[in-house]
Image 1 (cartoon, one colour):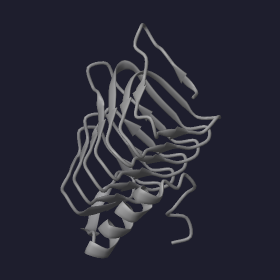
Image 2 (cartoon, helix red, strand yellow):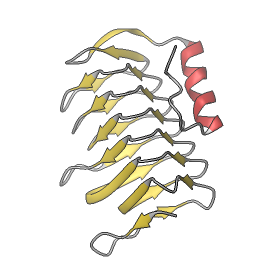
Image 3 (cartoon, one colour):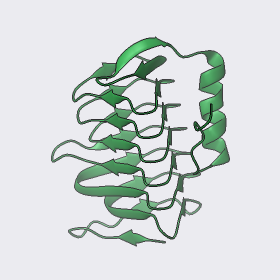
Image 4 (cartoon, one colour):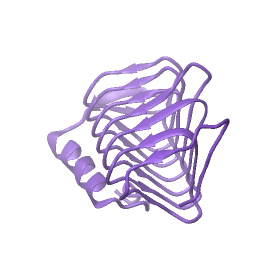
Amino acid sequence: MPMLPYLGAFPEVADDVAIDEDGWVVGNVTIAAGSRIGPRAVIRGDQDRVQIGRRFVLGPSATVHVDPGGPTIVGDDVVVEERAVVHGCTVADAVLVEREATVLSGSVIGEGSIIQADALVAEGKQIPPRSVVAGTPGKVVRQSTDEEVAMIRRLAATGRVESPGSGR
């Protein structure tokens, strides 16, 4: 697996975690079972820790990173699509971060939310559960449906690392 230590911290991943040969996991990172890391994707726990739950999917060229004193905590059944960035924040269970979206430091994304493609969640923003966020800066535009939350959980369970939201 393409994993590297950083300042003596080596990633800890469950036995069934699949990391693409062109993906990277570096430093103080914990990844739970059933997770998939796509090509050119990077999870970097260098200045703090990254803790990722079960059935996490990180798409191609996506990034998970931290801030000094600002860990990244990701729940279960989370899908982060291609070229998206999750940085120094908390992401609850069953969240979809669509392609090229960015979630910045200190933000908290509530359970069952969708961060739409190209949206920017500003630093320190609190997104309530079941929110759909669009735009730059990101604003809640509606509530997610039961069907959308079920779809996020299905996508996470399949472990697909291509962009599941493309073409929707």
